[in-house]
Amino acid sequence: MNATAFTQQMKAMSDRLVNLYQGIDISSSLPPSALSELGIASERLEVAAKMLYQQNQKLSLADQTVEAERQRYQELLEFIPDACLLTDAAGRIQEANQAAAKLLNRQQSFLIGRSLTALLTHETRQHFQTQLQRLQQRPGKQEWQVRLQPAQGVAFDVSVLVEVNRQEANQPLTLRWLLRHASDCNQVEAQKQPDSNTDLGYPLQVYHKGETIPLNPETIWQVHSGLVKLTTFSDSGQEVLVGLAGAKAPFGSSLTALPLYQATALADTQLWCIPLTDFATSPELKQQLLPQISQRLRQTELLLAVYGQPRVADRLHNLLQLLKQEIGQPVADGTRLLVRLTHEDLATACCTTRVTITRLLKKLQQQKKLRVDSKHHLILNNL
Image (cartoon, rainbow, N blue to C red; front, side):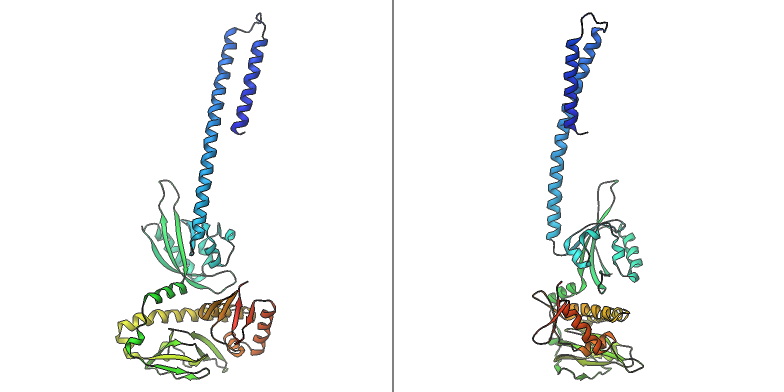
């Protein structure tokens, strides 16, 4: 029962007592003191009802103020371009903005109540749980690197900034999370750091599309522009894609343990040839190349995940998503792959035949998920 209804009932009761009091015969056996006490009790109830009504009005005003603050907080959360989460101490999501839903490829309402750990790849969950337990004993912000598994997509690395939200005593701890795609962070760092290769005097060498790039164990190649396909060969002689080296990416026979290793230009490509001895003795070169080598290793892991899909259609889907991240350029209603890839190139990457790839690509075009521009570059549509 709300305060308004209670007040109305109290007024009706008071009016009834007044009527009863006026209608009682003077000769009645009911003592006058009892009637007086009833009147006093009725007045006190009226006062209590008025106080309850006033308190209810104040609570209603406070609720309106809290709701307005909550709405402003939600609008601010959605205004932040990065993925933001609020979780409890165990990592269970309490709030998530639209950017987080987009990053994780899940509905915003789906994320609420879900464990953040469940959104990671299986091999990284145990380490993440250990970090989560240690976090509560360490004050201040911390930066982590985690590997997320989006819904129906290829796993990718995410840079995480996490902080414990210290609340009042006896209140449960909450954690604030800021998530960024690792490739975005790398782009930011690349913008901050000048390109030092041109200052070291290494000449650019050019290889045209389809040419095989010679691999010398005493040198490391680094791509200036273009794209290089890195492949090995199975026992049956089948070509197997192990990497795609785009701008800034290093490669070379000294960076692999594969006995058979081949580099082929997929487009007109410019390369720096860096002596291995320079890399071993130069801290500047190490600082520049080691993050790129690490990125290449992560890309190889993603390709292994592509090969692990039993269905060719799933392999192609995951490969296109990987290419979208590696060599994609935003265009109207989609992402254009900067390098023209033949059906044979895609078939090699998916360990299947060119005929199968052609059939699957036509199906994707019919489903409006993919299109081809005038220069035969693939465009992945935003659906």
